[in-house]
Amino acid sequence: MLIDYKNVNIYQHSDKPVLKNVNFHVDEGEFIYIIGRVGSGKSSLLKTIYFELDIDEADSATVLDMNITGLKRKYIPALRRQMGIVFQDFQLLTDRTVEKNLKFVLKATGWKNKKEINNRIDEVLADVGLSDKKDKMPHELSGGEQQRIAIARAILNKPRLIVADEPTGNLDPETASSIIQLLRQISQTGTAVIMSTHNIPLLDKYPGIVYRCADNQLEEVTNDFNKIQLAYDDDETA
Ligand SMILES: Nc1ncnc2c1ncn2[C@@H]1O[C@H](COP(=O)(O)OP(=O)(O)OP(=O)(O)O)[C@@H](O)[C@H]1O
Image (tube, rainbow, N blue to C red):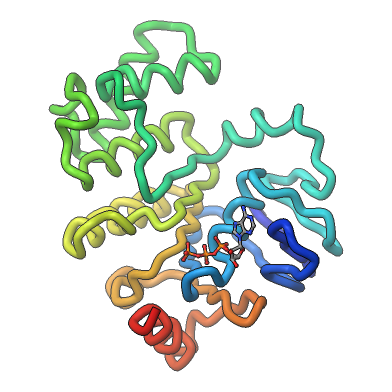
C-alpha cells in the first residue's frame, strides 16, 4: 500500500480541522480523483502526502511505507524522490530549456552519468509525446505542452506515486482531457496517480476512484453518482 491514512485530522493554521477523521488508502497503479468545492480541503490533503503540511493527529498515517506523523525533515528528500508532483501552474524553470529543466532534476537527485541522463530525458519526452521540444524554452510552449513537460519531469525517477494538484486547472477542456489521458496511461504502468480536479465531466470519460471533500470530511463516492453530481453543482455555483 502506498498511502494508508486512518482517522487523520488535517489542520491549516486553525483550531478547527479542514478535514477530520480522514481514511484514505492508495495502492499501486490506482487512479484517484479528489473532488470538492473551492476551499473544501483538496490541496490540504495532497500537501500532507508530499510533506508540505504536517500531520499531528492520526490513529496512523503512512506514505510510501513510512510513518509520517512527526516525520523528521531529514527523511523527506528520499521520500519525495519516490513521488512526482505536478501543479496547476506547471512550475517549470523559465530561464532554461526543456532539456535543462529535466537535467536539473536528474542531477539534483543524484544522476551523474551523462549518457544515462540523456537517455532518460529522451525516454520521458517520448512518453509525453514531446521529443521535438527538447531545446525549447518554457515560454515557447503552449500550456498543455508545459504541463506535459511538468509530467515528464515528475516521472523522471520512475516514481511510485504522482500527486497532481489541479493539473488541468489552467487548460482548455480539450487539452485538459489529453493531460488526464496521459496521467491515466502512466497509472497503467503501475504508478499511482492522485489528482484533485474541478473538471467533473472528465470523470466519466476517464474513470477512476473518486473521493469528495465536503463538510470537513473526505468520502469515497466512486459509485455514488448523486454525490459526484453535487460536486459538479458546487463547482457550477462557486
Ligand atoms: N496557508 C494557509 N493558511 C491558512 N489557511 C489556509 C491555508 N491554506 C489553505 N487554508 C484554508 O484551508 C481550507 C482548505 O483549503 P484548500 O486549499 O485545501 O482547499 P481546496 O479544496 O484545495 O480549494 P481549491 O479548489 O480552491 O484549490 C480553506 O478554508 C483555506 O482557506
